[in-house]
Every structure is written in structure tokens, then in C-alpha cells.
Length: 261
Image 1 (spheres, rainbow, N blue to C red):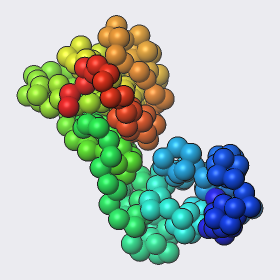
Image 2 (image 1 turned 180 degrees about the vertical axis):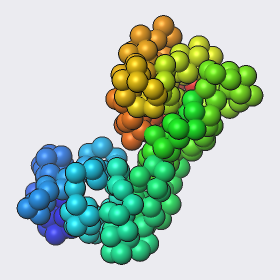
Image 3 (image 1 turned 135 degrees about the vertical axis):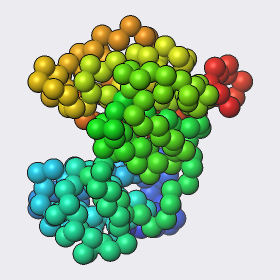
């Protein structure tokens, strides 16, 4: 939704020519701005609590910049994922106040740091150092969505004693994101330690029979721990978004909760 349409609708409500109920219905379905190569969902923040995220892979830097220019008028934060260094350089020429996180391949533009609105802490763990780029994508996404985020890297099952040094942090996290390639075993171990939800992220890291992440994906889907859900291969963004959605669930007053305060 653009500013002109929103102001016009609000003026009609203020003048009494349109009911609040009718305006609310229209706001739920006003959707996009057509800029020829993209239809931008300006209403997504109002509908889902976070603006549309730009998937940079397959888009030119000019297309990404064009979308960001329209979004920046109305949004406080804009994320672009899967952006390589060459595209990022072009984008930052137009948005010098934006930041490029090369390891996560993300461009982040924001008017201010987001307020912390999530209930607890989201903990992101990576099995190996090679899994950090996907873990960083998850962590940055969750942070920009208003969550406290902690990270622990390189604590995979090849040296499981490294994981147990972080036992307190793991147990206190409201949601955990566990990123692993190779055989994808770490989410099962972590989920066996905690009661809270674990989001498993398979990565394409590994030798030939890892099949570019398929082996890790199958292992995570077959996890015997019941509190594990799995996102797609290398989908750190999806994991961060889902973790934020879980961390923003409001418990009704008087309801019994097992989550840490």
C-alpha cells in the first residue's frame, strides 16, 4: 500500500463517508504496486508484521535497487537475500546507509535498529564453520524481525563436547535454529536436550554422497526427536522467519506455559 492510497482511505474514515469496518476490510486486501518488473506487496507489513523480503538471486542489481527505492518510502527495514558482492556494490551506491553482510549474502537497509518485540531469545547454532553463512542468514533475519539473537558456531557432532559447554544457553533459548551439513546429525542431538522448538536447516556442505544437502535433509526429516521441524536446504532466511513467528506468539493471560520467562 502506498502513502497516497492510505491517506485517502483514512480521510474517508475521518469524514464519516466510510465505516471503520469497511476500511479495515479494504486494508486487508489492498496489495501491490506494479513497477513493471515486480509487484511490490506494500500491505505485507500490516498483514504479517514484516515487509516483503527481496530474493536477490536471479535479479539484477538495478531491479533490486528499484524495489528497494519503492519500499524505503514506507518501510523501516528492507532485506535483500542471496546478493553477491558485485550486486551489493551497485546497491550500496544508491543506498550508502545500507549494509552488506558478505558471509550471509544479505543487504540490510533500515531507518533504525528494530525494537525487540520477541518473547525470548533465538539461538542459532552451526555444526561447522562452513555452515556459518546459512546460520548468519538465519540470525540476521531473526534480529531484523525484532528478536534477541545469540549465535554459537562450530559445535558439530565430530566434537560433541564443544556443544555441551553451551548447555545453559541452549536450555534457556525460546527457539533454536540448528544448521548442519554433512550427515545433518546436530539438530537431533540439540532437540534431545530441550523442550522448546528446534528448526533444523540442512546445508549443501559435504562430500559427494551428501548430494548437495539431500543427505542432511533426509536425516533431519527422519529425526526421532519430536520437537524438530525442517526447512529447505540452505534456507537460513526461512528458518529465521519461522523462528521469529514462533517467538512472537502471544500466550493468553492465565494460560499455562512451559516456555522460559
